[in-house]
Length: 131
Image 1 (tube, rainbow, N blue to C red):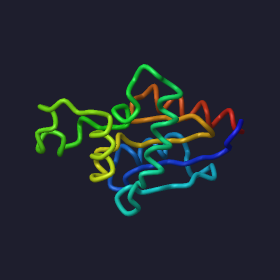
Image 2: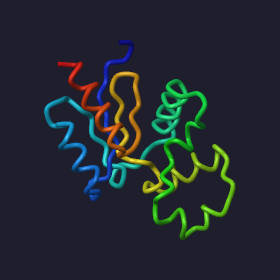
Image 3: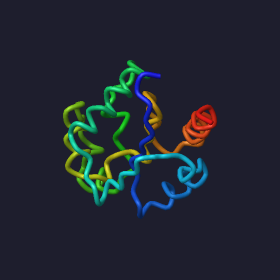
Image 4: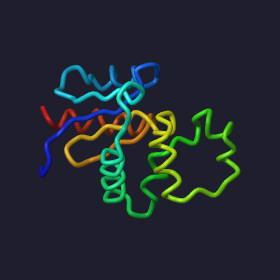
């Protein structure tokens, strides 16, 4: 384990984030919590998430994998009708916190993105392995 750490990027007003964080028992671990609405994601943080995403799945563009296409602004801004580049995805996430697919967990050097059941199960399993 090169980089022991526990961090979660979440939105405090998001019921899904709250449910997942409770389900995996975030409170039982020394997680660094970052509410992305009150503490904006920095470019360095986003770039680190993208680096980890690229290492885990080199076939999927990393910034796109972090981008939420279900965010209300995705349609209202007409982004769903555009072809976006990795640079576009990065810039939109930095400009608008709701574009980050959430929650994002970093457990050691592994990134877990989003709220899919299999992602939540993987987070729970990774945390169990730390006990």
